[in-house]
Length: 430
Image (cartoon, rainbow, N blue to C red; front, side):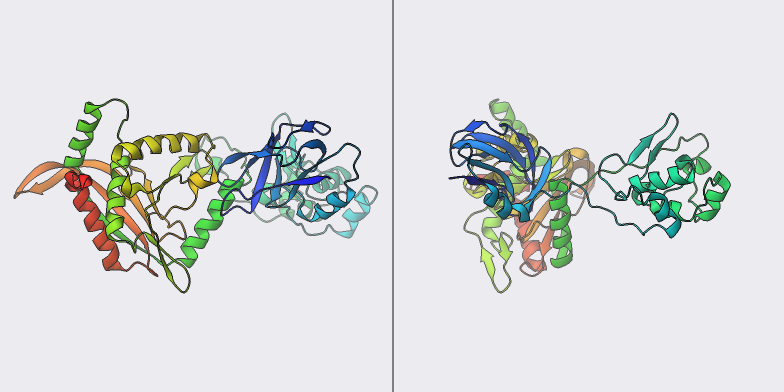
């Protein structure tokens, strides 16, 4: 009996996936558990396995197609089997276009007469760019047909569509064979070009890049967080001299695991969260959730987005264990090979931009967590020590808090504990 291969839910935030590549072709035999394709969620790239053995009878979604969670990807069954009913039942979750289609105003009557013999949609994902010897022009198919019918040179038309693309309404009011002056007069005044402000600067056309699944998820979740979670921020400066000395000693004493400042920060945060469980909690509508262990998400920047692999039960692990696990997780994150259980379910997140020389910043909470810690660079700066000016090593951190569960005093006490641990590293041994 034929079975469906559908787009799985690869993360708690995933609503749409991309079928990256098929490893099998229609008509190929497949075994149960065999990898048949690769899919991309908003977090990572995953291999898709066949649940049943049989023949790949139909590939519904081609390479690069976007599909909602649960959408039909392919049908596996016996050769010659009738799969029309399965295909019909899966049509409601068919692949969606990779970019939104822009609606345009209808052309005028004269233009409609010109193109009635061969009507085409005004926006088509493919073939919307005309390249000439001297200029690269973006135009819709309908606008190109109208221009050809009127004898208008598209190089002399200022587009009003997305990214300056020429669309039908830009041609509708123009007479046949309109010269450049008439074209410009028929349109609203264009903005001054870069060359009018900076002599000698070459004008470059705008470019567009559709959102991938990761960026779409980031846009949705961060907008949701910033507009629905009442953020407030607490900043504290920490003396890092003793922690710098400890890290130097640890790395000199052994070469197998190199300890980073972030590893020490994770351990210190975990210890402080144990003493302040509300900061490690979540707001859940009519109740608070206090998590039984500290699972810390590490914000890792990727080329096209951000992902937070999770160090589980960080409070119960040594700095060396945290360092070893973090290296593996970060490497897998950059290779887009994390599994869902490795990047979901964190109870607290740390975002460290110190390696980019950022001294201080505020991060957006990752729901449903109660807080996120933004960590800046360690800066050598003048400080007052016993009444005299000296050079100190200081680091600023900012705690973003969900005011529905964490009050100002609660957040301040957590930071005070966190600071005490970093300034007295022997506390990490307790």
